[in-house]
Length: 60
Image (tube, helix red, strand yellow):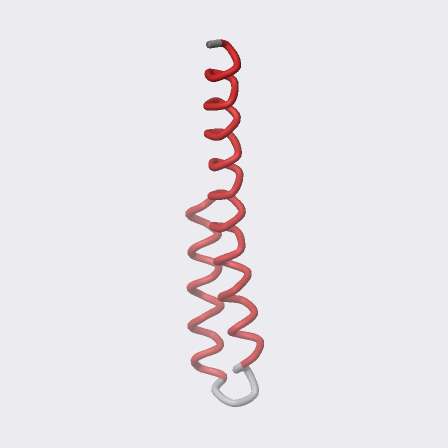
């Protein structure tokens, strides 16, 4: 019984850490997209950077 509870607790902790990594990666993805399109469309790049900073600011 104790092993089952321990496994369940580990699963919750692992899922929480993975969710945190996904949130951080989403902000990094937006920044990468902004850098990729900076030369072609500076206005879109600025919008993506603003979105990334807003997203990361909410996450902290």
